Length: 94
Image (cartoon, rainbow, N blue to C red; front, side, top):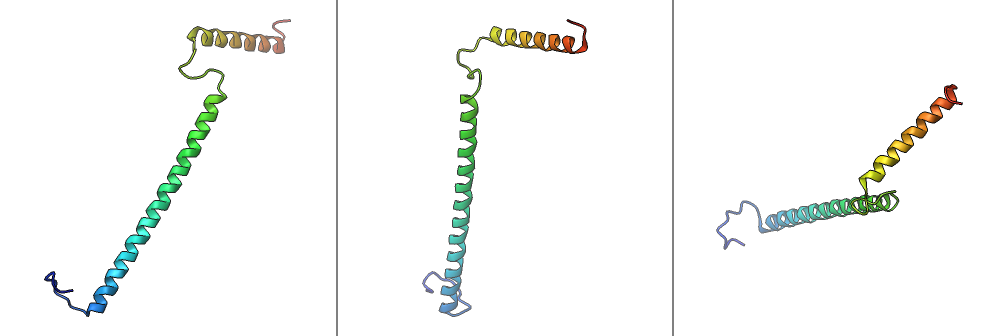
């Protein structure tokens, strides 16, 4: 144990005990880090699944077959029907 030129102040048994303790501490740190990474991967997978569901249930798929004129026309038509509904409720339009 002393071939490396170290100055041992304790017994070789103390040195072995300290080495084992440091090894166990490293093993626990590695387990903890692995558990955190696994948790992050699970969260990332859930987020990606939610995003996929959102895209699948969207009216207009992003960047595919999208015509901006359709969106503008739909917006104008929806706004007009909303205004007509308000006018009817207030008695302005009959």
